Length: 384
Image 1 (cartoon, rainbow, N blue to C red):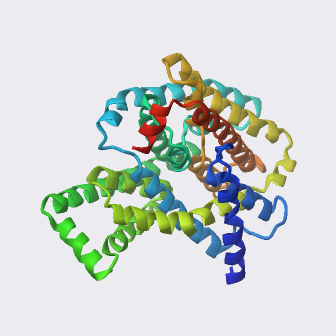
Image 2: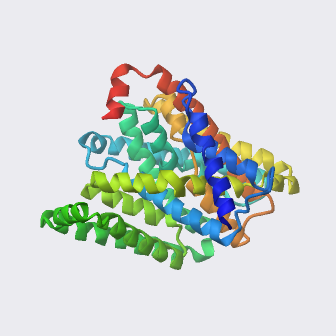
């Protein structure tokens, strides 16, 4: 990787804001970044190579930061959110149960034997994708507040479950790794809460502001990268490290200055770079090895959207249910782990990502329609 490549990546990342600029379209910024990655990747131009060590490592940093920011955006201290926790958790569980049937049918129909993997994929939600959409479109109201814990529970549960179902032979190792990361995040929460109550965090905040040391950002990055290192060492996705630390920051109370610094670091460079890397990692031509896997990808996407849309039976608005079906991190981790461990058939990883792209497209349409028809009171609530 060179500065010329970084220049092209930064330029291509502008496609996201350009597509999101017309407010009548209500498109999320990440959609343009993904499209740019697909166009510059092996599917079309072949300029960007997701296998480049520097590119993939920077993308991992961006992914960890995206998940950190996503977790920090979950308003866990909000009384209204806590009130919707039970409903959201039950809906996340219900989606998982509904997903078992199409997952079993697809695993049998395509002779892959990946019922558990497909169930996790269909049941997953992407907080990293959905939360920015909710914020950018100012979606609010009771239905959104109930959806937030739903995607948080689904995201966390599927992140933990993925290494267990994709490689059952090493399920115990993966489970211990997930417990280690979660336990360390819990320890960080205890330490931060004591520092907060003792007034030490406030003193550090004032010192950092007066001397322009950016100490909170530096310390946050130390902890984040340490958790990510633990996740890698224990064969757990860095998703869990970033998201769990973000939840800790949300529970303790993230300072505005730190939030702005993380936003600038993530949204200004490393976040777009990750989404371009993700698009570049999708070699859709690999589906040519087994054309039937195109149908598998389509059906995985349809199954995921259908499983989440089925929550309409529980009183959830259809648009919100479809929005909650957006997948990102879990399919990426599944494709990466499955390819690295040689657990997927040729073209199956691309099928997983094709399914994810379809859920993103469906959620984009659903969020756009929801934003257009949202009452004024809901929009105001979304800004609060």
